[in-house]
Length: 414
Image (tube, rainbow, N blue to C red; front, side, top):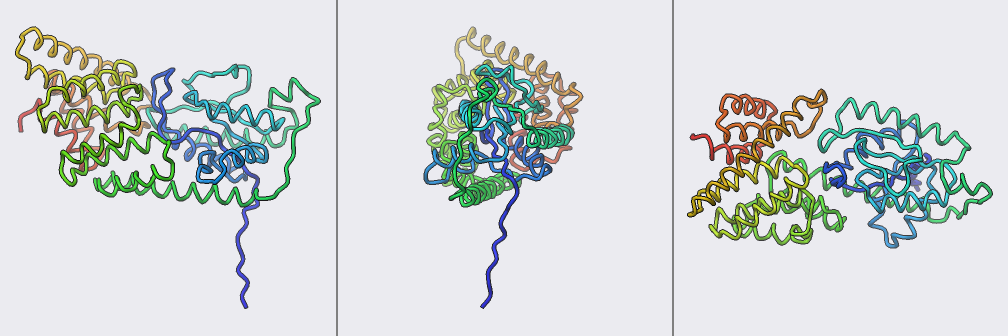
């Protein structure tokens, strides 16, 4: 009779407290991809330091979330808390860790974000996002330095918790090992399942297979219902399927994203996707209410967050509405609003392109595409063609080319 051996991961545990997906930092107005932070910086750093990285959000499939969360905050050999975007859950969990353990807690945040909750006196590790992503050079630097910091934290006996610093006679609590190993395995399994689904969704987008992308992000929403970025991608893929009909797909997408309450949102992704749905509904139905709603949503996304996707679509919708106006003064207002928006866009995007780190940005193709169409609309065609060439040189997916050309056709005749 053969004995089945199970590989047991005996590495020390690094429990990572952070948000999930793309989150907007409402202080700076920037959108950060926290998944990229985990995959490019934190996980490689933990593994380089010889630890097993377990992400806080990975345990949301557990039956009793409070017990598992507190257990890991107490028992983990190291806790890394990324408090970028002012995530209140991460800050709360950081406070629990500080109350439970005197040391081996590392705080980190994105460079442009602000510290909250009186944390500015505590040592904090900084890293830098470029757009929504992290450049390769920054990922190498940050993961290496974070690994060194983890090793030093594990070797130090000096408290890094302000609780134990100011209450030096306080004794940390202790629990038995029962169920801890099972909890860690469950967390990793949940992470692998979710990561696999997200990978399927992103790969489907890359090959322009919108039904497959919609199915993958629908599954992601089931695995983690409260994650807004998954619902955003689910809605985006759904309306692009055009199934069972273009109009039905748009209304299906609207029902998906309405759960994020776009009318009350300041999230540029939620506003941009909902605005796109209403713009397309107007193109199908010619219902002025749909066009006005798209303008309102795009307008907030651009004015509040200076988001260039919302800005380009805001200008386009102003042009569309100008063509529908009967009052000459309203026509003039819409035309001037479109022009003013585009002038602002050129300033915003040109400053991005001029940054030394621009080549490391993951959204370069969209920066070039937006600049191209903005230049075409401003009748600066030579500059527009240069940016179009740069956009196409980055090998965009079929759906990305179709999106770009749909806007381009408004200003350049075939």
